Every structure is written in C-alpha cells, then in structure tokens.
Image (cartoon, rainbow, N blue to C red; front, side, top):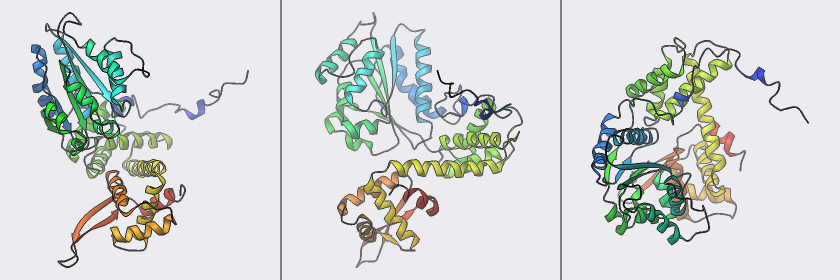
Length: 389
C-alpha cells in the first residue's frame, strides 16, 4: 500500500499559531449570541412570530437587504429565540431553514421539509401531486398531538422563483398552519410571483439597511474578541476593514473576509501581529479571487460582452449601448446574440458589481442613453478574461 498523501505535510501547518484562537467566529455563517445593530429588525420579526406562541399561525414576512446586511443571521437568531420560548408554552412550533441555492425547485423543498418533519419520502420519482399530498398530511391537525405550526424560512427565494416559478409559494400559502419568511437581496423579486399567489401571501416587509463603517467596526470588534488572541491586531486593522467594507455597500461578510485574510497573511509572513498593511494585501487577494471566480463562470456570450466593455474602456471611449453592441459583434465574429439580449447581459453584469450604468440626457433631439462604466481594475479584468476567451 502506498504512503498516505498527508504524511510529511506537517511543515505546511503553522508551528505555533499566535494569531487565531478560533476562526469560526469570522465565518459569516457563525451565529453569535449578539447581533449588533439589528435589534430593530429582529424585534420586528419577533412581533409577527409571537402569535405562534398563542397557537395562531403568524403572518408571512419578507426581509430585504443587500448581501452582508445580516438578514440570514437575524432570521436564524429569531428562530432560536422562538424555539426556546416555545418550550414553556403548550404549543408545537417547528421552524425550518431552507437555502434556495441548495433546494431550488418546489419538489426539492417539499421533499426536504417532509424529511425534516419525520416523513421518509423519495428525493425523486413521485409526481408533484403525491409530494404535495404527503407534505399536507404531516400538517394535519393533531399530527404531533397538538396543533403544529410550521414556519418555513426561504433564504435567497429569488433563485427558486426564477428557476421554478411560484408553485412552492402557491402550495405553502394554501396549506393550513404554515407561515413563510422569505429572504431576498432584491426588492423586485416579486416580479416572479403571479397575482393569485401574491394576494394569498399578504406578507409583512422588513428592510435591512447596509451597515455603516462604525457599525461594521462594532461587529468586527465582537468577532475579533472571539477569534484572535489578545493584542494581536494593530489598532488600524478593524477601522481599515470597516472602512473598506462600508464602501462595498456595508457588506459585513466582506469585512469578515478581510479580517480573516489579513490574519492568514500575518501567519504566512511569520508575524505575531496583524498589521494594517496586511488588510490592504487581503483586499487585493479577495478582489482577485472574486473577479476570477465570476469571470470563469460567466457564459461565453457574457464574457464577450465584458471583453467589448474592456476594449472600449481601454480605448477611452464613452460606452453607449450602440457602441457596445458594435464592439461585441466584432469580438463575436458572426456568433452574436441580438441587441435586446445584450441588455440582459448588461443588467446581470451590473448586479454582479462588475459594471455600472447611468442614464444621461443627450438633449431634446437625441433623447436619453445608458452610459456603461467598468467597476473593477482593467488589468485585473484583462488578466482573467483573456485566459478563458
């Protein structure tokens, strides 16, 4: 038998990690005992859910906010608090969290919920009607000896709706004793919901605003106390991470990534302290990896649109939709999509943060037009884009 591949790799482990005592608190999925600057939003969720403690099905809720604004953490925090409060009450409440990136069809979600509620159903092979009936059977009154109230948290619901339509919401809103908490990064996700479903959803909306630099600093300070050994962070580290993340639309995930990466760089350099300069290095590493991951996974036609934007930017051109389409056609060499489809690609690239668009007036005779601008470094884009085209 050959030697184990992990033998002899001890040299790659830090001999004596004097930086991190526990990395888990720096993971955005970590649920701390306290969520700074989200008491108002958590309390709003609780005010709607408190009805469940009286045996009444609570209202449906939708929470909005950009990435890294604490939506998922707040929902999970409220979930734990509700389950804890229900232990002292004569009610049966279950709260199930569903990530729609993992379960993105009605069948998958209902199968998962059935399994979590103790009913063994196949992950494939049944008709939609069979899985819906199996799910509803579980929710019949007195199935747990008492009335069961089920709260379903649907995180990143826009992904499921775009892929599979609103069938799941139709089923859930027409099943007794179920409340839904939907989480979305986009205010316009309800465009995927038909009026008949929207009217029965009747959801209460809670908006999560972006964190500012001072709030991010509070979050990082609490997490760093759990994650780092004492006196390992230079005074400038947390303010730098907070300021940089505040510019990224108040993204706490980005702030945590910066802090963790800066700590990793300190270890790589053999330093016993995390310095401010390591935060700047961490930013470059994160930006590079982010751009690389996005570009590699883009469809070919979208990569060509991005290449056209890059070329026009390097040529110093003002990028209008018309100029972009002409440049894109040259790059595509006969394998081009329609002018209208280009607008879809531009919108998607803008959502990814790679470009921005701005509508400007060209005067009464010429009307209005969209001007497109790159939001990432051209050298960084060129290096990664031309390696896949």
